[in-house]
Amino acid sequence: MPTSDIILHEEDYLAIRDLIQRLRAEANARVVCLVDRNGQQIAAVGEVEGLDTTALASLAAGNVAATDSLARLIGERDFSALYHEGEKDNLHLSVVGGKVILLVIFGVRSSLGLVRLRVKKYTGELAVALERMQAQSKARSGKLAASPFAEITDADIDSLFGN
Amino acid sequence: MTFINYAAREINCKIVYYGPGLGGKTTNLKWIYGKSSPTSRGKLISLATETDRTLFFDFLPLDLGTIRGFKTRFHLYTVPGQVFYDASRKLILKGVDGVVFVADSQAARMEANAESLKNLQANLKEQGYDLAKLSYVLQLNKRDMSTAMPVEEMKRQLVIRNEPVFEAVAQNGAGVFDTLKAIARMVLVELKKTA
Image (cartoon, rainbow over all chains, first blue to last red; front, side, top):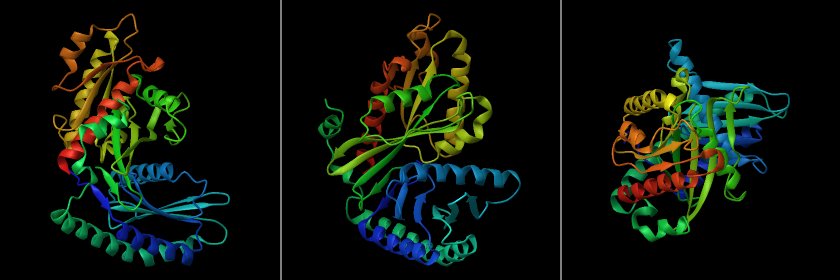
């Protein structure tokens, strides 16, 4: 298969969450979310209560994928950032390290300029953290079972379907 | 591409419903949404045209339960079936763990089925996947239509390996969950193999 599985361990998650929490505070944003390019949510911080972050992740990935294709159609490699302006809230999307999408929702307490500045500041740190996470995952996979599914039985799968 | 999240104790898999236009891919998802408990399903997102034709994709997140302390979540996607949306179909296939091909049983749609299946194989190949190795289920939908082709003839034309085949009438739910269970099982068994 062309892509390997993503494995997110507790300590990686905490490190990533710490970074996006700092970004959220410095950008005065409502929500900051990190999403993989296939639409899986990695971490979300801020006013996420009542927000369907699963749908948000899927739509953000679809949005970025469609826009990347548009970029290639006009001879660009990609568009580095997307901005959607609403009446009260706005959405800023950018790609980190070519692999994950950084999504920032912000309202009147912030501005596009501030968000862009802070996103730029944290993109490098996030890319480093993601690289480290990937390297550690690879190193770990040699030593212990990378997946909790290594030990599952047919009975476990049957129990999922109630038969 | 499966996403294993140790922090949230979750495992997420992506299943794509593929097939010709108006074959019943969205209807499959709507039925699953309607019959799943609100606690196990997320919102059904449909990016459709004004006439309810899928424009980009439908998306339904579904929790199937817990295995070994891990919540198993399946993200179900459909692709737009109409021929000219090929660029969108390619995007949706990225990171796929399992594919359901929803074939339209009506005799007049056999050519469209064959064309869509060929398109699926080509689009998967472009991204480095091989349909012969991927978790894959064939659903023969609209079995209630008076013009439905005999099952054996459809199998002869559409079966590409020894994939499970299900007869369905997605509009009233017949075969919908059997199809879903089969593909989910195949994806989980594959996970076990590669773990």
